[in-house]
Length: 384
Figure 1 (tube, rainbow, N blue to C red):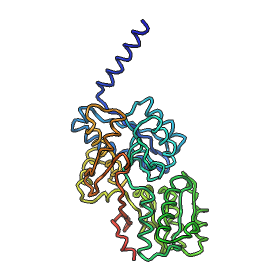
Figure 2 (figure 1 turned 135 degrees about the vertical axis):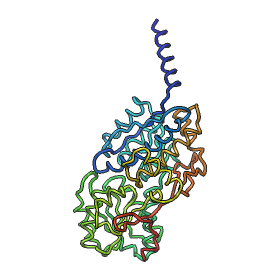
Figure 3 (figure 1 turned 180 degrees about the horizontal axis):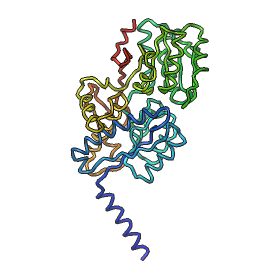
Figure 4 (figure 1 turned 60 degrees about the horizontal axis):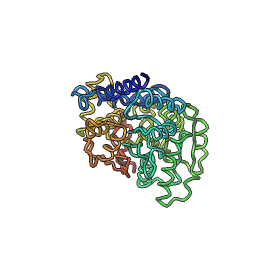
């Protein structure tokens, strides 16, 4: 009798999975706290694309469902969220997570559970091992590529290496951007990069004063300061630092949260630079126009932005892989499908490519600058 009951239970579970009309996708991200705007933006972009697909009939007649849990940008919350999504919510994949500190604890869980971890909003090296981890697949350019673009742009514009300083978050995220910049300086023949002024601050705080003091003590007055942090502390630092360095360039990586940074800075944001890993959200590229329309149809009150555009593109790539899998959808088949995407046109004039040895779809960086409170596309040569 006992064996019959177990057999019947397994049968019911298999039938329910086979006949499920829902594809469950997970996300653990910062929906609150100092990085909350980033998590909300990624979530809105993903949901806007899922809504578009669901309105058109879904994927293989199944609706897409995003289960998003708040981790507040804290690793201690992200790890249990990740296990809950995989073990209890039975998601097919986790996509669009935000942050490097959280990725440090969630990436090992994805590998342990053999569950796809796709399109995270971080450019850190922990997600970019070589050869790549099978279950960790990225869309965006790395922080090293963003800061390398900054270094090359500044040097080509006439800034000297010893006129560059740094202000970074004191964790894996800050380290990733800082080390990428040092590598770029060394590649350009500057051997004393570690001696450049480097201020730091603690994650999820606005305690920037000690970091600013380190920059003020620079041996050579900085003409450019590269920031790797969140929008709140970066905005506070820029406002304070501009009093001493009114003519310096302030450059931020994409994770800063561009729109939140500009809003926080107000008039002090003029000429602040942010590198992006997606095109400008107001461009006329077909994939970006499609995004704006889908976002408006999903939530008319939400303004377009770089972060939600990234979430939208991540979801678009993910659903392309789902469609390629067809009816045999498993946690393994979705990884195989992503690795098979070659020269995928997502409408941004930058084809996305994956393979078993290439788990980063894009390597392109788009520089932008704040002018009159709004972001404009920047050409590095304009800095001259």
